[in-house]
Length: 126
Image (tube, rainbow, N blue to C red; front, side, top):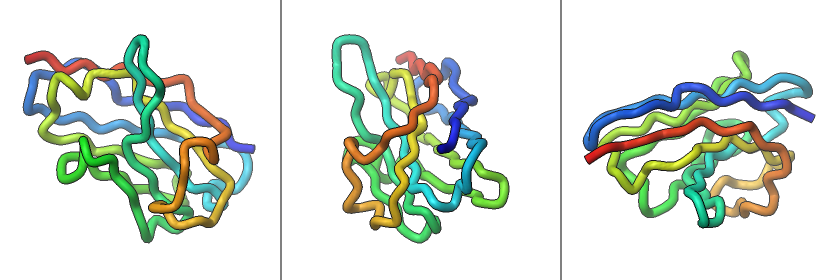
């Protein structure tokens, strides 16, 4: 099983950019699909973006499509979320997660992600 640690959160103004990085340790990173999720107080954790084990296909929530980009480097055991055009509604704690599957990113569901990081706070001010 992998262990996940996120970094890169912070505070930015609306329209700004941030890059979140998740570093994995433990078992073979390339066996896992990876995802980013976010959560605000009182709401369920929601998916932001997924990337399959090879990095060849991705999925984005409609709310971030065209603004966020997910990528991975299996040699470095990292997955990155580039966030551009940030909006106040993007404010949340962002979590990295892993799923031991070779499924396509578009077919993944939240319940398939069994390993989670501790989260990193992103705050976007207007």
